[in-house]
Amino acid sequence: MPKKTPKRKRVRKRTSTSAKGEKLEDKILQNLVSLQKVHTNLADKFENLAEQISNLLALFEMSARTLAKQPHMQSTEKDKEFLDKIDKLLDQNKTLARGLTLMEGKMRERVYGQPPRRMPGGNLQ
Image (cartoon, rainbow, N blue to C red; front, side, top):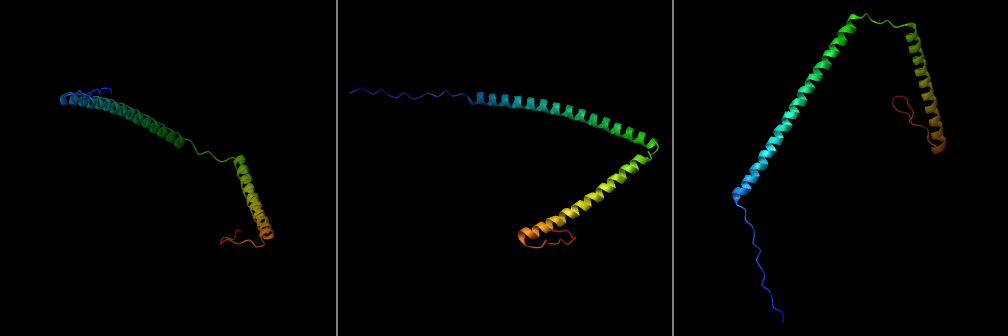
């Protein structure tokens, strides 16, 4: 019968509480230093941002003054023609929309056998 070897107890290395405390303090100190660096960097960026916003505001003010000094640009004949063409296109678009709505109503009536429903505004549904 083989002999049983006695089990050895594991010996834990005990670190003193003061060593753990020192490590913890070092970590906290490192974290505080890195946090201060981040805050400093953030403060610099905010300062740059504030300066850029001030420059942008000055540019807007200068542009507004320049526009205020210039006489108003009067609409030319070409502008009026262009606006008339846009108005005609809008009218044509309305006419097309009405026609398509009527066609859709007729198709719905043929396919589903029900007349189109009228919305309160007079539009078909």
